Amino acid sequence: MTGIVALYIFMLAAFTGYEVIARVPVILHTPLMSGSNFVHGIVLVGAMVALGNAHTPLEKTIGFLGVLLAAGNAMGGYVVTERMLEMFKSSRAGRPRPGAH
Amino acid sequence: MSAAPAASLLGTDTLIQASYFVTAVLFIVGLKRMSSPVTARSGILWAGAGMLVATLVTFAYPGMSNYPLIGAAIVLGAALAWWTGKRVAMTNMPQMIALYNGMGGGAAAAIAAVELYRGGTEGYGAATLAVVGGLIGAVSFSGSAIAFGKLQGLIKRSFRFRGQQALNILLLAAALLHAVLLAGHFNDSPHVVTGLFVFALILGVSMTLPIGGADMPVVISLYNALTGLAVGLDGFVMHNAAMIVAGTVVGAAGTLLTQLMAKAMNRSLGNVLFSGFGDTGAGPVGSVTGSLKPIEASDVGVMLAFAQKVIVVPGYGMAVAQAQHKIWELCQLLIDRGVTVRFAIHPVAGRMPGHMNVLLAEAGVPYDLIADLDEINAEFETADVALIIGANDVVNPVARTEKSSPIYGMPILNADRARNVIVIKRGQGAGFSGIENALFYLDNTRMLYGDAQKAGAELIQAVKAAG
Image 1 (cartoon, helix red, strand yellow):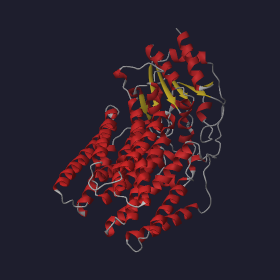
Image 2 (cartoon, chains in turn orange, purple):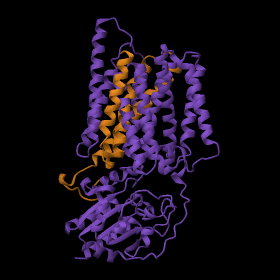
Image 3 (tube, helix red, strand yellow):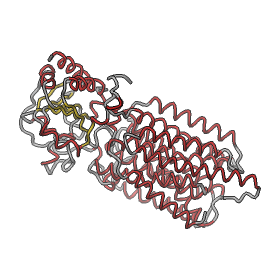
Image 4 (tube, one colour):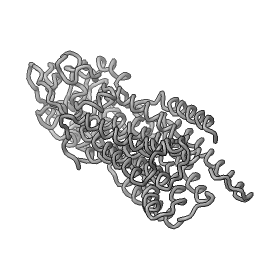
């Protein structure tokens, strides 16, 4: 990947992120923040490669912590986002009983 | 990327790159679907599938070792997060997002640290990206940890002292000095790498400590965007397209989301970061005239039962009392009687924008009965009853009129324009900001004192009794 191509990817990805979120209603701000929090859990693949190439005890320790934290980011982000979005229902889809949860 | 000469490795490499491409597409489609309530649920499934593909295929990455360590770290981190994520109450969701986000920032910093200690960043470009990614990731890590501690109630007070901004600038300068030494390859020694991360971690702590609890959602959102950016920068260092795309998309989306939140709270980002309104609330008590007029639940029940239109204004007080289920039960009774019921949500109801919607959704309230400020404000004039439950500052008309008030200029819900206003409130104290609420003293306002859950139960009985 040459530098200028990488720069193009960066620019296009930035606009994509902006456009995808641009018209989101306030009711989804919290779940969406949580969802984007999950998406940067992709740091896990980088942490895996970093630990996979670590040699000294120091590198291995930091790499281990990196993978541990990244896995927590990805899994935690997924679980809480899924829990929140699961509850969003329209009244047309049948009204759930009160207190049922 | 190391050019693997073996033909078999080239095949693996193509598979990995193709999988990362699919992951990037799944992430973007998933986020797009998450931005509409109708498709939001499927959005997280799409993104989750992308994450699974990327994680599995990375085990086939050429030239890796330490597989037992990798496996153990993934299992341990994922299990801990799964366990905490399943257990957390919906009211505590904001701080959990902060916690998981901080973990991502820490991981981004760790990647940069391994690369820098290993001397794996040749050339000025890669070194600069690693240094900046590591710096941002470390600030996001320690800053998010403080944000978590504050919202969770582990850190009770805000630490402010003279010269705090100067200290932050000094810390930033020290971190940047180490960054320049590393990026320019003037001094690559491990001590300099350590120094960079130490100063960055302290900076994250000292930046976040003075910020008040009310502003914390904006800060969490900002750190979310920063973590995304750090991940994107690390992606350039690792030549990993999935990380570049996902990190940058989140960086941009998170920045926009931060601006939207700050706007919804009537605050600018600079204001949040560099001033301390968030939880001071020592504003002057407005000169409010009139008296508080109490009312009995049975009278409110009759009023609600024979109304045409009722608008419910829930606040964080309702969520604290866990009254949303009772209130929804009450509203269903009213709907069955033919009353039009709407829920009016102020952007800062709950602890972050959209949080109240999550809490109502948990109780089973369909989202199409819920309206935000712009949609509902004109409707209050045609409402027979505005039912205020545990909300205070967001319905205080002082925000429209009194220039000296700290909440002056904040957009409010026009509950005072409804024909009757019923306020369910625990006691006679002032609101979160300590400001007296003029709404409570209006001629058309009645106060129903009591715990929101108990009041809800009484109102249900009263509406049933109304026949």
